[in-house]
Image 1: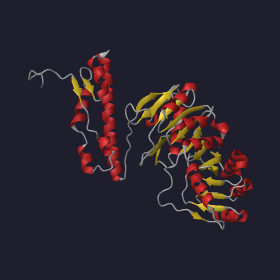
Image 2 (image 1 turned 180 degrees about the horizontal axis):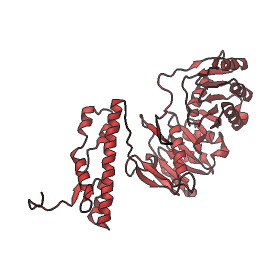
Image 3 (image 1 turned 120 degrees about the vertical axis):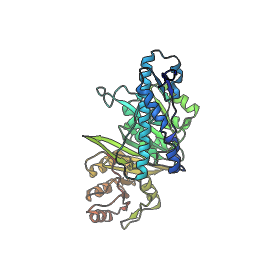
Image 4 (image 1 turned 60 degrees about the vertical axis):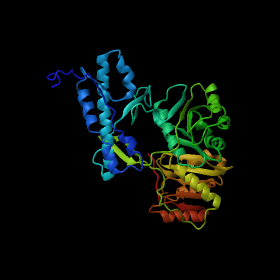
Length: 422
């Protein structure tokens, strides 16, 4: 048709699609406004141009404009841009589908657009290939700014940093979380993150070596001073003072420093691969708003015990199940003193937490991510000197467990909410 009219063939198509995800991310956006952001013609142009990559260059990202002016190999560049255009329209349609599915409250299918944005040397072990995929093109790992990387982030680093960041975001007050192999080994809150850090490390100083650390406040020189000479793989925080960053990187040539604004997505799903498919669930962001705590024992927790229990309850939710931890008040805050997680039975978790705590177990409070199926866990806690317990309740033997707590003089609170983490 173009040739019949004497018009030259089109060899370049440039399209910027309507910013659908940007607009729908605003809480005030209406459904009618969202519909107007569904680009029809732009998607059709990109697909048509990409189909004809043999002679047509298609551009959907301003970041490619400069290279398009003088590509090293035009044919290879056109092919690469065609692939990018199809990936872009796929992600665009997937975003629309996810939004509409959420509005319908009955998603029939899930389409995830993932982009390889950060190279990994290998996976959990050197013989495993691995890649970091982001949900948006060119997004950095964990949607965080890499302030300093003495060496590239690894697969295991990213898992630990993600776990540490999610845990530290559970606290409104200044908090520090130390994670090793996906398991928190220390959690503390205080008047500042510098004050909390030594208590988090002291929870399990052996495991803290080679760990990653998350803080929910600006990292300053006092924080670096509190860190001392401890070797850590990485730190993630909302920011770093210039002095703190300089001190951290001056002698720690292999450390990684990540910066990310506080907060987590309000509505978030997580996916795990299983044989033949995937499991999907909402992310556990803590107790629902209507959760109610109730004291079920004759003894009532003291005011200090109750405050420590609330801290411990937030912390235990981020330990691998079965999970039990012991906590104590500190100057200006609270801290874990012993963590027992990832065990097939709960009484072993209590024993391990007590072993980690040592003498600090005496006078501590205990948090358990799920109910105690038998009185033995309560009896073990009493041996260690625990004075108060928080757990979901819900066992068919709750009456026996409560009776054991009463017999041993412990205070116990039921939350009614379980927090398994597998």
